[in-house]
Length: 253
Ligand code: FPP
Image (tube, rainbow, N blue to C red; front, top):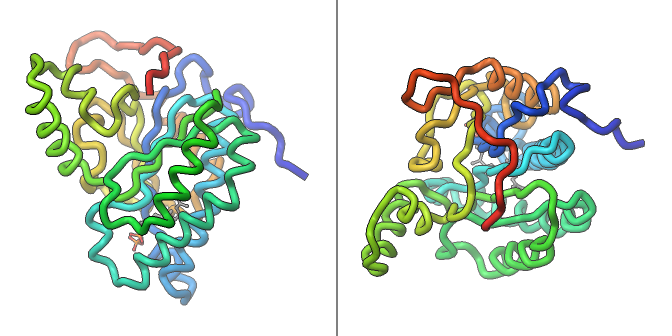
């Protein structure tokens, strides 16, 4: 039997004060596995189930955008067997979940570079992006082979070629995240206080919530706790007055 539908009201959250965009650094898979005497990669496999749970929960809560840091440009430094496992895991996830993502109305987008990613993985991501392009529910941005510094450098190169007046807005259109609202909330699991080269430009005014829970153990309860913490924050964006962002965003992406 499916678990009951999660609603902001049932979760004790203010539906009008939910973040438009939640970004997540999914950390702690390796430690989760080590604590159980398992190989690190089993932590990633368990982490895949959390990805499924969090996508579903964000969709049910009506959050419009979720960005998941699935593989960084620095993760290539990991042992070849772990890198290969992560590539295959994404492939498996997309193959197995595509139908369910379509059922939930999830729209997938990829953020990151295509170089070095095995062609079969790229092809599967492209297939999933195309297949979900018309869905109207939660947009899941998969940051894969993503690095914030690299993204900024790539955008600088494009901006230089474009030769149009440079403003924060026009520069933003050269980033991988063009058309997306900046994240309102960054969640990092496993108790680490670092940004790790994630969305360096876009996180300028994000509220940061660090959960002590390791990613494979992160669930609906922890997500709701992070959202409740976000709702207790007062956002001033450098000013003195609390700012409440409008509820609906137009999708340009
Ligand atoms: C960080 O934990 C996690 C990663 C580098 C990979 C994230 C991958 C997943 C959650 C698996 C599935 C993803 C998708 C999208 C299907 P870590 O290995 O650095 O943990 P540690 O700090 O405890 O070693």
